[in-house]
Structures are given as C-alpha cells and as structure tokens.
Image (cartoon, rainbow, N blue to C red):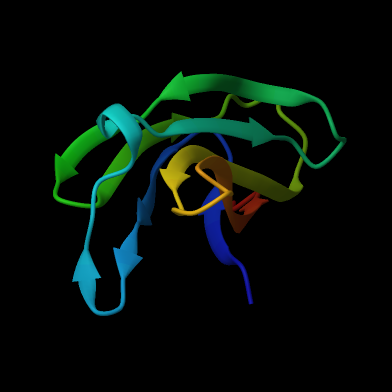
Length: 103
C-alpha cells in the first residue's frame, strides 16, 4: 500500500543501500532521484539525493496545488560494483506514494 501525502505539501523520499545487514555507500556517494507524476510526466529529476549517513540518501519532494492526484513513482538510481565481469552496474529502487486531496 502506498503512503499518502496531501497535494501541495512536501514529503521525504529515502533509500537505503545494504550488503547483507550492513549499510553501504554507492559509487561516489551519489544516488539520483526522479519522481514521476500519476500522469506519467516528470515532477522532478534526476536530482542528487542528500547523503544522510552510510548507505542512506534522502530528498524532500514538493507538489503544487495544480499537480494531478494519484500514484507517484519515486525512482532512485545509483551504481554499484558487483565484482567479477559485471563491474559497475546501475541499481534502481522505487517507492510509490499516493498524492491525495484533503478538505
């Protein structure tokens, strides 16, 4: 179930990267966020997330009163060295939020 946020407000999107049970940083301590509106257009991004602590990145997302209601996709992208022949490959994480209107 998606977390609900009121339209014309701000919420925190956050991602945590781990190896086993240990938080780890990604390449260059950089993770990028793109947010897609419910109509498929881009609300923002890609923007660089704030490195909060080891393996944790965040970004505060704001919507306006004219943005559509519905499900928004917060897509985080970074790069990890998976070793072997794979080397550095992208890693994607997605969070779904529901933008609602409250009276």
